[in-house]
Image 1 (cartoon, rainbow, N blue to C red):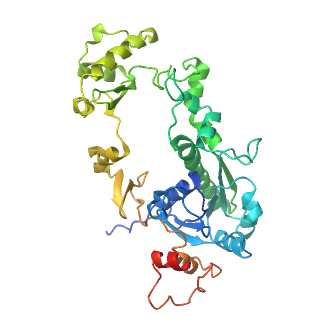
Image 2 (cartoon, rainbow, N blue to C red; image 1 turned 120 degrees about the vertical axis):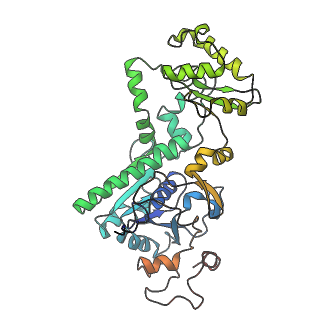
Image 3 (spheres, rainbow, N blue to C red; image 1 turned 120 degrees about the horizontal axis):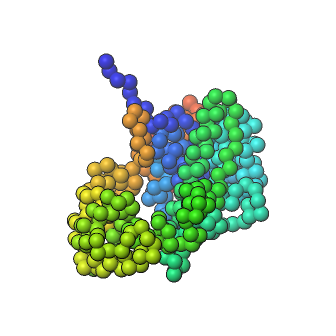
Length: 399
């Protein structure tokens, strides 16, 4: 019996409108696109990416782009036409901006009551700080997460913008809009999803809050089991200036770690007594300084000691395990993360390179039946004699 054809991801057939911005909303749109959704990004004429040329902005992969001037007379109506045909709309404006532009939840859901309207902000849609500007570093600082990271005698360590924008922001937005889409499919009624980075980041600290309440976590960084305070859950510098990450928490893994490090467990302080942790850390640090990172990698790799080298981004893309799983892949001329998570029956795929602004005006107008898109012909109008315009041509001539 011939198996049924595979769909292009579990979200195949789901239509998403993304109002272009920076940070977590584009990443959320990328994730939805990776999983098969038809994501149309609404770009503003003349807008540019934040420090990344559009052709290399990986967060714009698996999307199509149209140009709409939301400050023009017909711009808001064009977005509402897109919303009328969409399942999900996501935006990352400050509270009230979408409403002032005429594309807020009330206006868009008036033409499509089943629409799920996802709102991505740092502070949320209400509260004293809601109208204020901000960035990842301030959101995770306020949520208590930044203060947990780093050495006890130094400043908090900044985890790029991964913890707030993407973990506390994008992923919660995606979970929210997909949950709301399930409800809309059952009830026929959409809703507004208020995804705030401060909320998501605070939510990520749930296990630590529980440990704090139970007395097993000190309210300060670098003093606890999982924040570098524990000597067998920490990083150590090697002779050549590299670093090794140690996570030998369980007794059996700790025993393997100590053995491979070349130490005698009977000569070491009791691992369970925090009073001996400074001496234990010193012993481990001295041993790691006797050899280079690659040498220690050879010692520990393939064992249950739970030790790994700290790799750079380029090194990570070349790691044998990640290459086997295609965790990183080279597609469309770019080294980039592959699709995650993975599905056995409906795998996602990197179908499209990063979308250039306005590159799919004609295509989206035809597929979504929206003749109002600037420069797009009415549905059914034959394509130009040379065929469907290429992204390069569409970008150059503004259509």
